[in-house]
Image 1 (cartoon, rainbow, N blue to C red):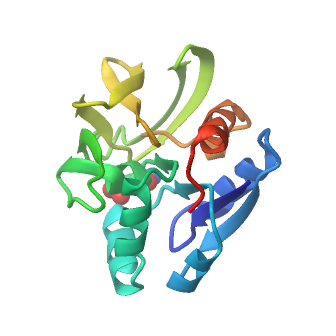
Image 2 (cartoon, rainbow, N blue to C red):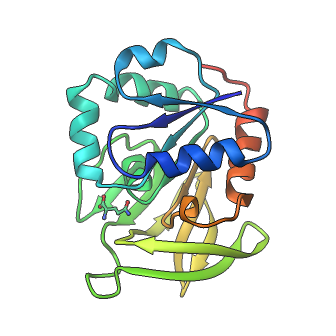
Length: 194
Ligand code: GLN
């Protein structure tokens, strides 16, 4: 199994390391330009970083249309923080990018002072999952087929819609592989290899 890691900006290296450490013996492929998509991938990680910068780079490098097509056709994708914003179909305080997931997100939702914090919580039935938030968004609402998977203080911080998984927090910064195992299982059971 090969997992593409969008490597334009942000903390892609930490994601890459976690994907390799997770169950499933996945190899990784950094996606930096269009020809990186010549190799088939079974899943894609959109890392944290700065969503407006990532959107601009995606457009400038000609990666936007092909990646949106692959996600729409069912490629399993995991977006964290800025990656979550890239997938949302409605963004309060920011711009829509791929817009493939039926969620409304509020960008920089926790304000400047409380923008970064650590807690633990339940994620899809898994207990005590570490959750590091850095200038994070939260999910204002899910609609259609999108379902919440985790909440912190009444705010939705993780969700899934079919092939799309998002978390407002950064599991790549903690030593807990469970969310990567969850995502790689999504990739292993998906019918798609794009
Ligand atoms: N605040 C960033 C944005 O709006 C996201 C922060 C992050 O990815 N850690 O893109």
